[in-house]
Length: 217
Image (cartoon, rainbow, N blue to C red; front, top):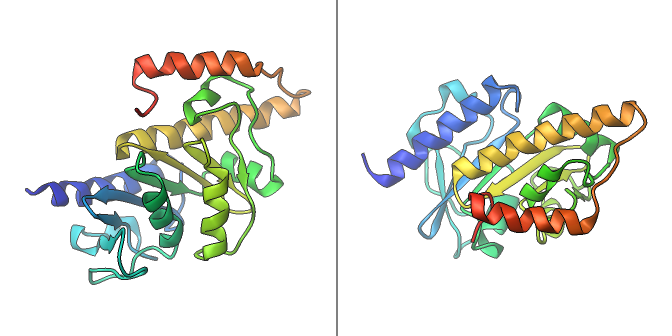
Protein backbone atom coordinates (compact mmCIF):
# COMPACT_ATOMS: atom_id res chain seq x y z
CA UNK A 1 0.00 0.00 0.00
CA UNK A 2 1.39 3.41 -0.99
CA UNK A 3 1.88 6.33 1.40
CA UNK A 4 -0.98 8.15 -0.31
CA UNK A 5 -3.30 5.18 0.18
CA UNK A 6 -2.38 5.04 3.86
CA UNK A 7 -3.17 8.76 4.27
CA UNK A 8 -6.47 8.41 2.45
CA UNK A 9 -7.49 5.55 4.72
CA UNK A 10 -6.35 7.44 7.82
CA UNK A 11 -8.60 10.37 6.86
CA UNK A 12 -11.59 8.04 6.58
CA UNK A 13 -10.76 6.32 9.87
CA UNK A 14 -10.39 9.69 11.63
CA UNK A 15 -13.67 11.00 10.20
CA UNK A 16 -15.46 7.91 11.46
CA UNK A 17 -13.72 8.10 14.82
CA UNK A 18 -14.68 11.73 15.44
CA UNK A 19 -18.34 10.89 14.79
CA UNK A 20 -18.25 7.73 16.90
CA UNK A 21 -16.75 9.67 19.81
CA UNK A 22 -19.30 12.49 19.65
CA UNK A 23 -16.71 14.99 18.48
CA UNK A 24 -18.78 15.52 15.34
CA UNK A 25 -22.19 14.68 13.89
CA UNK A 26 -23.34 13.60 10.45
CA UNK A 27 -21.32 14.93 7.53
CA UNK A 28 -20.69 18.36 9.05
CA UNK A 29 -16.98 17.95 9.81
CA UNK A 30 -14.04 17.58 7.46
CA UNK A 31 -10.38 16.60 7.54
CA UNK A 32 -7.40 17.42 5.33
CA UNK A 33 -3.81 16.15 5.24
CA UNK A 34 -0.83 17.49 3.34
CA UNK A 35 0.69 15.04 0.87
CA UNK A 36 3.71 16.44 -0.94
CA UNK A 37 2.53 19.40 -3.01
CA UNK A 38 -1.11 18.38 -2.66
CA UNK A 39 -3.81 18.36 -0.01
CA UNK A 40 -5.99 15.30 0.50
CA UNK A 41 -9.42 16.24 1.88
CA UNK A 42 -12.64 14.45 2.76
CA UNK A 43 -15.46 14.70 0.19
CA UNK A 44 -18.57 16.82 0.49
CA UNK A 45 -21.86 15.55 1.93
CA UNK A 46 -21.11 11.83 1.92
CA UNK A 47 -21.73 9.83 5.13
CA UNK A 48 -18.35 8.72 6.46
CA UNK A 49 -19.39 5.09 6.58
CA UNK A 50 -19.86 5.26 2.81
CA UNK A 51 -16.61 7.05 1.96
CA UNK A 52 -13.96 4.99 0.18
CA UNK A 53 -10.30 5.86 -0.35
CA UNK A 54 -10.80 6.90 -3.97
CA UNK A 55 -13.43 9.46 -2.89
CA UNK A 56 -10.84 11.51 -0.99
CA UNK A 57 -10.19 14.53 -3.20
CA UNK A 58 -6.68 15.69 -4.04
CA UNK A 59 -6.13 19.45 -4.44
CA UNK A 60 -2.91 21.23 -5.46
CA UNK A 61 -1.62 23.43 -2.64
CA UNK A 62 -0.14 25.80 -5.20
CA UNK A 63 -1.43 26.27 -8.73
CA UNK A 64 -5.03 26.57 -9.83
CA UNK A 65 -7.16 27.41 -6.84
CA UNK A 66 -10.11 25.09 -6.45
CA UNK A 67 -8.82 22.47 -8.86
CA UNK A 68 -9.18 18.91 -7.65
CA UNK A 69 -8.71 15.34 -8.73
CA UNK A 70 -11.22 12.68 -7.79
CA UNK A 71 -14.69 11.34 -8.50
CA UNK A 72 -16.26 13.36 -5.66
CA UNK A 73 -16.07 17.09 -4.98
CA UNK A 74 -14.00 18.11 -1.96
CA UNK A 75 -15.60 19.40 1.22
CA UNK A 76 -17.22 22.80 0.75
CA UNK A 77 -14.83 24.02 3.47
CA UNK A 78 -11.77 23.41 1.28
CA UNK A 79 -10.88 27.17 1.14
CA UNK A 80 -9.74 27.42 4.76
CA UNK A 81 -8.08 24.01 4.64
CA UNK A 82 -6.14 25.07 1.55
CA UNK A 83 -5.24 28.52 2.87
CA UNK A 84 -3.97 27.04 6.13
CA UNK A 85 -1.77 24.62 4.18
CA UNK A 86 -0.50 27.45 1.99
CA UNK A 87 0.27 29.89 4.79
CA UNK A 88 1.35 27.52 7.56
CA UNK A 89 4.19 25.17 6.56
CA UNK A 90 4.13 23.84 10.13
CA UNK A 91 0.64 22.43 9.55
CA UNK A 92 0.24 19.06 7.85
CA UNK A 93 -3.31 18.26 8.96
CA UNK A 94 -6.50 20.16 9.76
CA UNK A 95 -9.50 18.76 11.63
CA UNK A 96 -12.80 20.68 11.59
CA UNK A 97 -15.79 19.55 13.67
CA UNK A 98 -19.05 20.79 15.12
CA UNK A 99 -18.19 19.43 18.57
CA UNK A 100 -21.00 20.31 21.04
CA UNK A 101 -19.26 22.39 23.72
CA UNK A 102 -16.85 24.07 21.33
CA UNK A 103 -19.83 24.99 19.18
CA UNK A 104 -21.81 26.30 22.16
CA UNK A 105 -18.95 28.70 22.95
CA UNK A 106 -18.63 29.57 19.26
CA UNK A 107 -22.35 30.38 19.11
CA UNK A 108 -21.95 32.62 22.15
CA UNK A 109 -18.73 34.01 20.59
CA UNK A 110 -16.80 33.33 23.76
CA UNK A 111 -13.06 32.73 23.37
CA UNK A 112 -11.55 30.25 25.81
CA UNK A 113 -9.17 31.95 28.25
CA UNK A 114 -6.39 30.42 30.35
CA UNK A 115 -8.79 28.49 32.59
CA UNK A 116 -6.59 25.38 32.47
CA UNK A 117 -2.90 24.91 31.75
CA UNK A 118 -3.78 22.74 28.73
CA UNK A 119 -4.73 25.91 26.88
CA UNK A 120 -0.99 26.04 26.16
CA UNK A 121 -1.42 23.06 23.83
CA UNK A 122 -2.88 25.51 21.33
CA UNK A 123 0.11 27.86 21.33
CA UNK A 124 -0.82 30.67 23.70
CA UNK A 125 -3.00 31.90 26.54
CA UNK A 126 -6.36 31.59 24.79
CA UNK A 127 -8.29 30.01 21.95
CA UNK A 128 -9.78 32.75 19.81
CA UNK A 129 -13.12 32.89 18.04
CA UNK A 130 -12.87 33.52 14.30
CA UNK A 131 -15.32 36.17 13.09
CA UNK A 132 -18.47 34.79 11.49
CA UNK A 133 -18.68 34.33 7.74
CA UNK A 134 -20.76 31.94 5.68
CA UNK A 135 -19.42 28.40 5.33
CA UNK A 136 -17.21 27.68 2.34
CA UNK A 137 -16.40 31.34 1.63
CA UNK A 138 -13.13 33.19 1.30
CA UNK A 139 -14.30 35.53 4.06
CA UNK A 140 -14.48 32.58 6.43
CA UNK A 141 -11.03 31.42 5.38
CA UNK A 142 -9.60 34.89 6.00
CA UNK A 143 -11.26 35.02 9.41
CA UNK A 144 -9.91 31.59 10.37
CA UNK A 145 -6.37 32.55 9.36
CA UNK A 146 -6.51 35.64 11.58
CA UNK A 147 -7.75 33.60 14.55
CA UNK A 148 -4.98 31.04 14.03
CA UNK A 149 -2.12 33.55 14.15
CA UNK A 150 0.28 32.07 16.69
CA UNK A 151 -2.22 29.29 17.45
CA UNK A 152 -2.99 25.73 16.43
CA UNK A 153 -6.75 25.84 17.04
CA UNK A 154 -9.69 28.21 17.02
CA UNK A 155 -13.43 28.37 17.45
CA UNK A 156 -15.52 29.57 14.50
CA UNK A 157 -18.36 31.96 15.38
CA UNK A 158 -21.81 30.35 15.08
CA UNK A 159 -20.20 27.35 13.41
CA UNK A 160 -17.75 25.02 15.17
CA UNK A 161 -14.04 24.52 15.76
CA UNK A 162 -10.85 23.46 14.07
CA UNK A 163 -7.50 22.12 15.19
CA UNK A 164 -4.20 21.79 13.33
CA UNK A 165 -1.09 19.70 13.74
CA UNK A 166 2.12 18.54 12.13
CA UNK A 167 0.38 15.17 11.71
CA UNK A 168 -3.20 13.95 11.57
CA UNK A 169 -2.68 12.21 14.90
CA UNK A 170 -1.64 15.51 16.52
CA UNK A 171 -4.51 17.44 14.93
CA UNK A 172 -7.02 14.86 16.17
CA UNK A 173 -5.47 14.95 19.63
CA UNK A 174 -5.82 18.73 19.69
CA UNK A 175 -9.43 18.54 18.54
CA UNK A 176 -10.22 16.22 21.47
CA UNK A 177 -8.32 18.47 23.90
CA UNK A 178 -10.13 21.56 22.61
CA UNK A 179 -13.55 20.01 23.08
CA UNK A 180 -12.52 18.84 26.58
CA UNK A 181 -11.39 22.27 27.70
CA UNK A 182 -14.46 23.87 26.06
CA UNK A 183 -16.66 21.57 28.16
CA UNK A 184 -14.71 22.40 31.32
CA UNK A 185 -14.85 26.14 30.65
CA UNK A 186 -18.57 26.03 29.89
CA UNK A 187 -19.33 24.30 33.17
CA UNK A 188 -17.03 26.57 35.17
CA UNK A 189 -19.07 29.53 33.91
CA UNK A 190 -22.15 27.97 35.50
CA UNK A 191 -20.61 28.12 38.99
CA UNK A 192 -19.23 31.63 38.90
CA UNK A 193 -16.47 31.44 36.31
CA UNK A 194 -12.89 30.16 36.33
CA UNK A 195 -9.82 31.50 38.10
CA UNK A 196 -7.48 32.26 35.19
CA UNK A 197 -3.81 31.40 35.06
CA UNK A 198 -1.39 34.32 34.48
CA UNK A 199 0.29 34.81 31.10
CA UNK A 200 3.73 33.97 32.47
CA UNK A 201 2.51 30.58 33.71
CA UNK A 202 1.04 29.71 30.33
CA UNK A 203 4.26 30.82 28.62
CA UNK A 204 6.15 28.46 30.92
CA UNK A 205 3.82 25.59 30.10
CA UNK A 206 4.18 26.24 26.36
CA UNK A 207 7.94 25.99 26.81
CA UNK A 208 7.68 22.86 28.94
CA UNK A 209 5.41 21.18 26.42
CA UNK A 210 8.14 21.34 23.80
CA UNK A 211 9.95 18.62 25.74
CA UNK A 212 6.92 16.33 25.68
CA UNK A 213 6.24 16.38 21.95
CA UNK A 214 3.20 18.63 22.38
CA UNK A 215 4.63 21.52 20.38
CA UNK A 216 5.59 21.42 16.75
CA UNK A 217 9.15 22.41 15.95
